[in-house]
Amino acid sequence: MRRKHLRTVGLLVATVSLLVVPGVADATAGASCKVIGQTRQVITKKKTDYLICSLSGKRKMWKVTTPAVGTKATVLKTGGLPFIDLALTVKDFAAQCVLVMKGNEVVAEWNFGTHTSNTKILVASVSKSFTNTLVGIAQRKGLVNIDDKASKFITEWIGTKSENVTIRHLLAMTSTRTDFNIVNSLQDLRGQTLFPANGGAQHATAPGLRWAYHNASTQALEIVLSRATGESVSAFAQRELFAKLGMTTTIEKDPKGVEAVYVGFMSTCSDVAKLTRLYLQKGMWNGEQILTLEYVVDSLTPQITSTAANASMNGSYGLQIWLNSDKGNSITVGRAGSLYPDLPTDAFLFQGACRQFGVGVPSKDLTVVMLRPGCDTIEKALQDQMDPSPATAFIYQLGKAISSLR
Image (cartoon, rainbow, N blue to C red; front, side, top):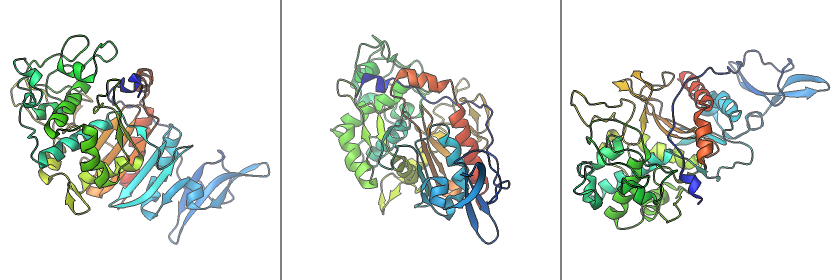
């Protein structure tokens, strides 16, 4: 993997105006339309018709088509109908795939352009949610306890200001260590994580006291996992997670062979959907308890690692997972209340740079994934940060679709 693959940043959330997609009420077979290839669904009491804007001579008009053709869907069942506008909207924002599951059933799937259901994408900081899952598996197996000091495994921190940082602090982003400077670093990912020199992360100032999103906390978990399990993170993940859930996910490495657990997971839309389902199913998969129920609940709960008067916690963050909870203050958007007001407050999100999303909504037993071209260079990541419209469009259309569900 090129070193530039690792030069990416976390997703910044912002809100911009959205181009509203017209409703279906103005579309009837034989009526005029404006955009060739645009599709609509028209629902009556007796049936649902699918229409596509086509040329008839020199005139653009709506014609009846099939669900698969009309929406470019690989899979489209009744439960997927409310998500057609979402798919068509994010397609215009370079979405590569959209996948919707109701319970264990895939009710809609779209793959755009040359993307197929088997195409893997660098999912950026969605990787952090995979890494949290691996830590949870290690805890279930008795190999780690997230309330232990990370220095139990990262012995290089003993005698430093990071000695009292716990594994939970790393997962909750409250270690108070600083991020590493990937661009200027002269070290591999382990060196950057361990030592404050030459671009590495700086040691903790007050473990557990303040929330701050950065990559070095997650990358430190590579050392914890590999030393706790006695094998590479990839080997552990393949046996304990990927194979059991039927995933094709792999983990990219830096030039010295260190796995980039904060950003380097290569996954399909289906892989991210399965990870989301694992949390919706309270850690259970095919009759096996992959994660304990307690760990799932912990991961989906806003983390309070200090109750000191000067503590600064984030009500929108659990264990390497974004939460839409309306309890507490959301540091990310600088206000009290939920991260995304358009979505149910029980929603949780795996999010990554270049607007990668895996969303679970427990109250609807719903999984929705959107993947876009991966950020494989720092330039792409920075450019993406300047344009939040793909995320805004996705969240708006997702909220709209969810609100229509019974």
